[in-house]
Length: 352
Image 1 (cartoon, rainbow, N blue to C red):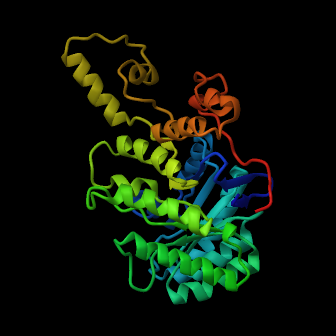
Image 2: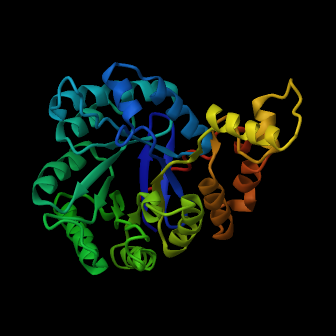
């Protein structure tokens, strides 16, 4: 069976058809996060620190590291991104021992990440574009690392799943020319938003099965893409992930953390409750309040998507004796993930 090995200095994460689903935490990424981007430009890494710790506590097996900030002071990412990638990786490696996924569109940043990362990181990513193939595949071979292969090429992203399969096949074949085995290729078949394409879910399930059966590769995706633009995105994601797992998907780049309830939300709810004539104890703490009224928690905790993944692992017999599910559902403070502790990270090392 195909197994993709990703390692830190001390931990191993395995992507495989008979392995628990691998969660790649996506939060260390300034894309679309103006506050984080401004912090990084100001040399403030406090949010990176919080996101790294919170994602591991929520059960992330691998952390994606993206340094793609366009500085106001210097808009050239070829100059700014490599040193920033170095800083972030060194910081994260000092906080946690989970393996890393080095994520960049800047070639020099990718290589900087490979030089700094301990162990055997996952490289994110290569596409079917000729220029990208010619640069990234030699790096993959040189550093002996696995790589995410995204199913688009010089023509862009096709809505036809057969075209996306053909691009993935091309990348696998070109990688083989460099002596890179298929088990070190993790294909991202590109999940389309279901709100824009009604067949997007069915397409990706069919494509994942074909990638597994015909190319024998592990797969990943940006899990939240499927629900983009729709209400109750978590509800859609919670259904999508187990279905994708059933089709053969072995990992996802996603947010494993349910974000804390904000003070603004707490204040709004308290005003609503008081307007209804409910008198709250003056000494009631915020955590007790949000728990009482079903708002969530004031602390980062595993998201509902993690619950769906753990349940699917149990149902597909990738959770021996239900140990991970039981651990996940321990009450807060008893050592389970529900109490903010880390989940299964890494695993036993096997050859591909």
